[in-house]
Image (cartoon, rainbow, N blue to C red; front, side, top):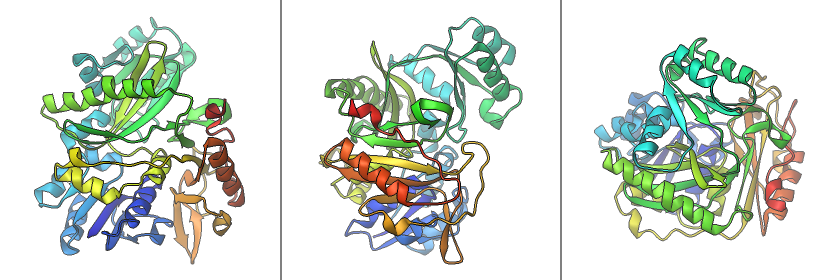
Length: 419
């Protein structure tokens, strides 16, 4: 089969790596790809928002399946566009991707179907939002309604910080139209947990749970990023809690979307908080998480292409999906200055010295035959082991062998699982 993956980050590298293992994949393409993806797939110089050109490429190259990685093209309707050309595609249609692209929509859905989530109000008017905000307890959560590259959520530790975040989103428009509406939400405390699921309408096949580290510095300090590292399994979280989250949040959300006439097909990513009252929903994403994908897919034993095809063809219910018992830890190597401004084009060395660790490229490019940095999150270094401690030690050993100027990473990824 000929497969095209759309995207160019660490998530797409992990997807391409997993698809490459399938004996059924004859040709693998990635648009636009990156310096590392070029090692497992043929990179195509098309951007994720070039729907017409992607569709034409798929027709010209007799592509059997297109897999959509990032959130932006999903929210803009790439699946609908390709389906109209009768091109098989894995990912939710635009009317289902709204679960991620509108925080207001998702919160209203949770309320309507009694899906556990934090108390909230949504606002289009800045003065009304500010008045409501000033009556809330600190810490408080401010969310831009639309997509903001993983940076549209602020957990404010003071009223001053909260008011600044609200002003930034609604008045200064730092996220553009994504801040036309905001959600002001009760802060939930507890353990975070991410559960990704393969979904086809009512059929939900959960993947192994993972935990991400959003803050840029150790001990969850500093601004939020797209994710600085992740690990699986979550041995410190009882299976009963994981099962409760699947039964009370994920399956009801999939069913709710069917009831709303927006059946979801693709990967449904639940961002959850395990509170003293049980699991609650922080948010849903409509695609593979990044960097969760970089630890979840290395534990997948079943052929990923078979799963994608089963979902697209409506046979997901018949799939028996198997997972390795191994642990996986991913450490993100970031550019100096990330998540604010950062340099690009710096040479990367040591990639051949990482042993059996997997290195997924997030922000790299090929230049004069060598690899250089080309993003804020540069590499995801993933290692497998018999347990978290072993996987963690291997990941950090490999991370230390990779060098580029200003390299920055957290030193406490997966530490919570060692207690």
